Image: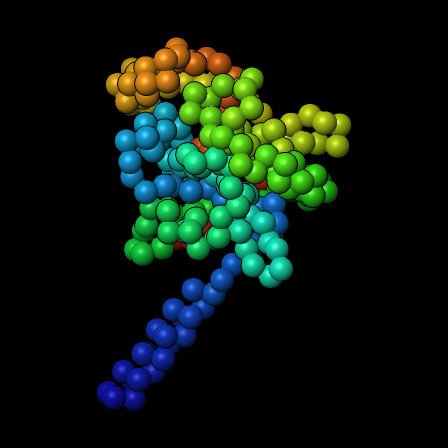
Amino acid sequence: MKKIALIITLLAVGWECFAQKPFPLETGDLLFQVTGRSAYTEAISSVTRGIKDLNFTHVGVAYVEDGKTYVLEAVPYGVVKSPLEKFFRDAQKSDGNPVVVVGRLKPRLRRCIPAAIGKIKTLLNKRYDFVFDPDDDDYYCSELIYVSYLKPNGKPIFKMKPMTFRDKQTGEISPLWVEHFKRYKCEIPEGVPGTNPGDMSRSKAIRIVHHYF
């Protein structure tokens, strides 16, 4: 019995090591994240839906530099380059693992990545776009990717669609959004072209190659 128990233990340890083997992220990979809960992220998740009905609230771009992986992202304090570990810490957890999914551009589009990374670098330290205005020089997370990921002809790889701030369940605009836009003294941009992490995760331009949970 002791021998059997030892074998089972060794197999379990071996499987755990295999399951926890780091995934080799590549520069340009999109990291879709279900963020830790807050009033703001709850408002986002109530109006968006990603692959497998995951309510993604954030998306960033993997960037490998000198053997270390970072995330280029637009967060409430601006467009920044964050350590990958911080990105994982900020994610909601499932059984201790970050709820993060990796999307990779399909081969025909991967030549566009160097220019996209170069564009994002020029936007570092820009302010976050709290009002989702496509015409200003501030950027929310998926907007940063939309303006940076371009085809060789200069057209965006990802598509905009009319934004909605109506709850998926009730069809009503959440009081959280009403209060949010009231704070910024602007109208709710219902129907204005925009992007969101959920729609982007379902784009035909990428394939999902990994999830961390």
